[in-house]
Length: 415
Image 1 (cartoon, rainbow, N blue to C red):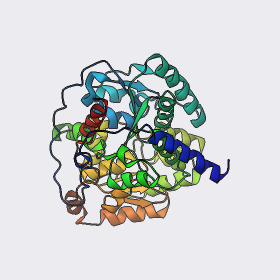
Image 2 (cartoon, one colour; image 1 turned 90 degrees about the vertical axis):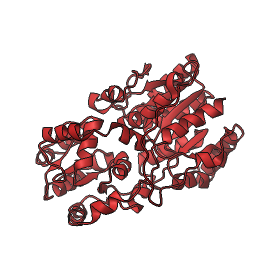
Image 3 (cartoon, one colour; image 1 turned 120 degrees about the horizontal axis):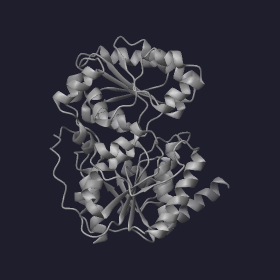
Image 4 (cartoon, one colour; image 1 turned 180 degrees about the vertical axis):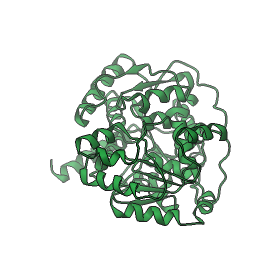
């Protein structure tokens, strides 16, 4: 298909979607909170509103640890009207199953088969097929997807094919790097979604520039803020976590690496592990199953073992480790958001980022694998005023009320 034909096809999809706009009666000022450009205190989390009455009509589809984390509070706000579907894209107990219990969520009502560990094409095919049958047998009013995973993209398409409205949480992120699989997923969901819950004004602008109807775009903030505040351990529990890992506050680096562009590339993974081993502080390295497998396959097990990797940790323990680390190093998307809530500096080991707000606000620093990692780390570790500056900088991802706003938007639109 030519580029012209692709543009025409996408244009047709947008026109079709516009014909079935999802209007709300909300005051636009209420659904477009101001961005956190200046100091703004984060209020304590409010209690959830009373559960919406009626049968379960809202399917929240998750498949990975970040999706569970970022939809957990929304699930509680929706109450009995919502139910969880788990694709199993993350099939490791430490990466998904434990998180349902940690957030006090009911077990998923539907678990898909054969998705975890499959190729990207197979994951799309299996999610589309199984959700297509489910949406035919039990037709929810709304399907909620989060972020940019294969699960989110396939579930959004399955719902769209079934004529079910789609809500996209964390809509509008763009790296402008089409080599990133998540970028394609974000664009796919953006075409079929009916309600776009953008975390920031920049994300909302990305959607409008792509031709998305402004009536369907709402700036809600990012649900990661309340998830982080909700699960951040208190001082006693944090002390137990640090003791278990043999580290002291502000005297270690917390690092995670798992993205395919890093973990599946021998040169990049070797450079990252080598640079981390050079740092002047101990490194706590929870090793993602992908990274362990890649290190074995690529002959880099010795380089990995120099860091004394540990197993993946639960969300609360991870937040405790991140909150008390001197420095964070990661290629994760979610940590780019969490560091702004925890007020910690982060080195992002990637070629590009879809979260420029974290960089612009001074929390995140984008570097590529190689000597730049150690150089950036030493510069940040030597910056005596950095901690105070970050502590005074508000998170660009909102005030901790995103899940409440999204639940209200969904409920109002169905009234």
